[in-house]
Image (tube, rainbow, N blue to C red; front, side, top):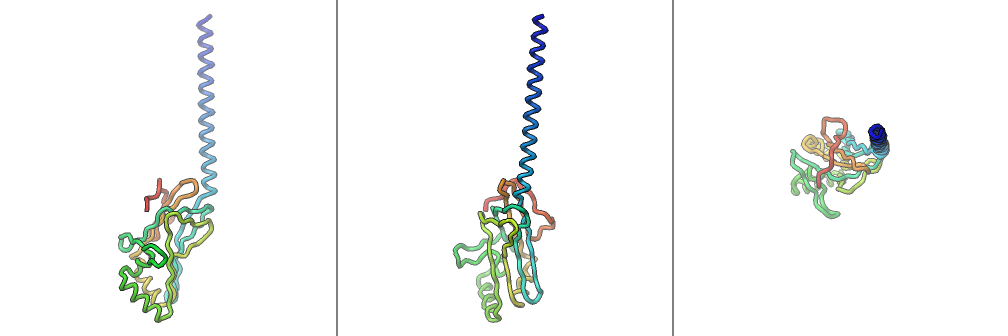
Length: 193
């Protein structure tokens, strides 16, 4: 009789272990589902928008069409596959301007010619730590006037722009200007800039 009692106790212990395992599994799955729902509520989705009128202006914008803010962790501008760095300080030439006129002499000559024609170029840069709010568009480059527009359009195929950004939950993506893939690529983490 004592042997049957021991087996019954063992059965009760094993059943309790199975029930607690099912409860733990259900809890883990529920946590996974809740995180997925939350991540869809803070999901950023960056895209590049180019607008031009062949003889009037060219504009390059970064737009967050997602529903959460995008935290920029790295941005790289390349010309002919080589990364460009902008200077520091308020008077420094951003890397995007260097991509259009890589040498200082060329940039100064371009600036003189543009000024003589009353043409303008406005450039911005995105630095690690910058945030692109949901539903917002940031102007990266705008040129007005035929001379500058022709210059920019002549080098656009040589210049690329890559952003690595994360959501508030730490999910990260990269987006490249001339990437044939339409959607941002999910990455484990962003490289240090």
